Length: 314
Image 1 (spheres, helix red, strand yellow):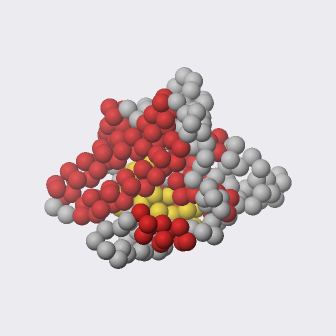
Image 2 (tube, rainbow, N blue to C red):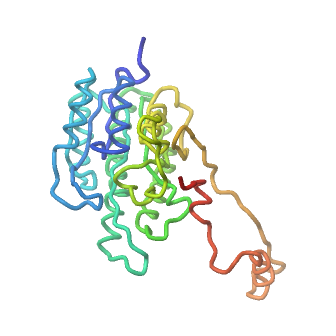
């Protein structure tokens, strides 16, 4: 039986642990040759010395299961190293067909306490890291398409977050980066569709090193009682599907995924509309229209993350 991704090659960033590891293993299980990228720093805030260990271990795990994999231990937020990552896939496997952007760090702080470095470092790894790899992958597919005289095969799966959708009081840098990734994804989807390439984003909910604080109060099953609903293995199959030929018509989409559930997120819709009775609004007119519209809303209230995400503490 032919596997869905047989004959294709993939790059997965941040694949040494957690979600990226599960995604790399799933792509390999579906037949893809995988470049396992991970900078290998031990701290989830990007601290500590870089290490070859995490990427090499996952690549070795794939090879031990009969798959093809090679490790790349560069920093995707560095433009030159991102170029080398895409180049490694092409050199080792002949082409690049799938790019999964997952690498990221956390440096949480309230907006009034956040330092410039805490802001810049998170934007750099998440948003710039996604841009860097996408830039070189897109150039590769565009050149292939021009040489072939028509569409080629290309899939991009980017990693956003429900922190972008619902807000995260202590993560203004992370939420902003994840929102930017959605914008990057939709723009890329429009730009590359003519070349046969799709770009989609996922908002995964998973218990990993990155989210250990977020899900600390949400109990998993007792040992031997099945898979944790927040296990990364629930997310990986959707990534495998989006990377496959079956998802050719899925483009520019945002999907929330966790624990056996996939939700397709609609583009924002207009909730209410007000028109001025003269050439332009006056302060008094806006006060008369908008203030009553929000009159039933407690002052300072916003969407409660737990309500939006539908989480229940276990």
